[in-house]
Image 1: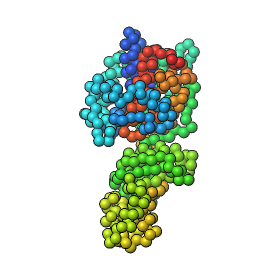
Image 2 (image 1 turned 90 degrees about the vertical axis):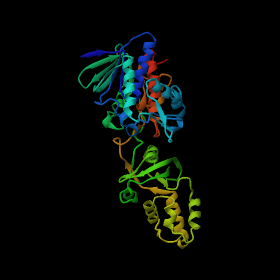
Image 3 (image 1 turned 120 degrees about the horizontal axis):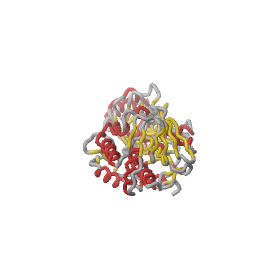
Image 4 (image 1 turned 60 degrees about the vertical axis):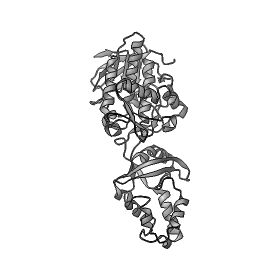
Length: 422
């Protein structure tokens, strides 16, 4: 069977729903009622929205700028973010009946503390402007025909034709939610290129077996993490909470730094992840504190800095008897402990993969997209938004903000029927 729509949005996640809503709103504002069809292969719509923020959905962050993102250039990312900023996001959700609250971390959550509130509001808004959502309907291929526009093949054997197409397929992270990377094949089939590397981001890191971190599972501490090149140059630095686990490192700081470490080690196998267990304190600060302990034991001082079990493990790694008084430390042992506390190289062996990654790094470069419309520069009538683009942000609502902003820009453009070159 062959079906026909004016606009097809592939993917009903955050960016796709936003694109569909604004395509419908813009279309209706112009007095038209074109058919807008949204396709999603997942059995559960908006699964990523539902699991985000521990099931509460971290809608955005109170302060968002391009510095929170990696991938494409800062100016390009900023240009899209400014089209639909945080105040507009808060206003948009309020208009849907979803009030947001700001927590101490700067994250914004729905006051209901349930992600279902967010998803239901988006689905309702899409329905209000006549967007048809078909799921599960898996797209298996896309081609462009000069006169027919775009032709989409589905797993059921049907074809769907449209003049305007939005790819909001996501990346490869959390594949159980439907993000399997198929959108990359669609984009390349239509003439786009992809970044050299596509890899998990915001992903827990694996630490070599035998490291003391494995024995301290469940401990959460503030840290500063650095990615250093093989020559010692600091490539990235993130501070925040770190969770020690049975496999390695998780929590906000390791997740934030993960994409930078994985990117660095792909080019430089000698790149390392360095942990400062005393964030805000330098080697010199800690060395001076240890040298002035006198009769105070190393362990007593350590327990004022880190949890006792972690303190004992760090001391043991530096070959220091934590029960000894400070004045009994040799200079070399003291400095070795100060180094272990402020610049411990952790042997990372890999990551937990897309199954546990919150986002995907890499994708279609923004240089191949017209930022005013998110329209393809290589295939007329095609628009791209969300995670399929080479943009990934820190933990804390930044990736959702990119989805809202890029989806809004793409949706308004196709809703207006604006040609790709506009």
